[in-house]
Length: 324
Image 1 (tube, helix red, strand yellow):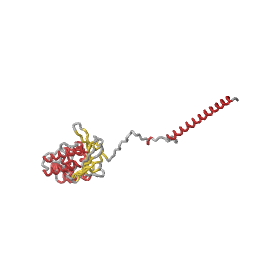
Image 2 (spheres, rainbow, N blue to C red):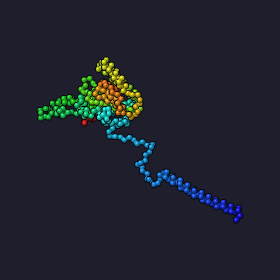
Image 3 (tube, rainbow, N blue to C red):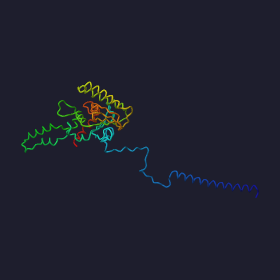
Image 4 (cartoon, helix red, strand yellow):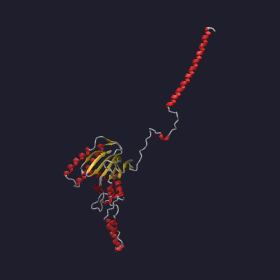
């Protein structure tokens, strides 16, 4: 074999070997990539998909409703049936309603009124709140003929007994008082309740607001009540001076800052003082019985009431708890 023929044969063998080696490397590389991909995707061993374990980051589970709350239908805000430990702990929900402003009826916040369970259970014993005749009244009114009473005497006896019983209905709270009226009506009924029970007003904004806005609203309500009391001769100059100091204490209790939608502010009137708390944290206390009473009374005023829906719902709620 010539040198040229031998060199050509050697080159052909080298090309064939290179092709085979390249094919082997390609197969090995493909297999390596496949194994790496298989392990990276965690496909081995195969795990069946569990639908109950899938969570989409774009979906929010709605907050569960609880039987321990009552929903305000106008705002979709929930109020607890009983206030949790903290300021006003143990007070029971009587009624709730939305606060609106302007002729457009813009919703500002949802308010709820609370009182002591023991006082509500004995509501019949409070002046103006009897919702059913007592057994003694019924016995006196329903005398039998065996005692010698004729029809007219029995009718007169029933009328006399009924006239001595103030039978509370929601209309009594919603009706302003009349001079020499036979029954207690209007805001005087709530005032009577405040004398016997610690009470609270829970306020939850429907839209984000700030402490200054709420503080100014409370201050305007108290100034209006003060003006009415002064016109009725119920306040002296000394009282006005004391109230000026108390008003400053009320304003100082509210810090600077915002109040987000859904956060709760609580006003508790008890033992002649007003305690203001926010989300369970006490902001301040005003030791003035007039301020403590009249700020709550502003929600049940005979005129220019803060929330007519709250007043209406509380009127019905008192009738219901009085029947327990």
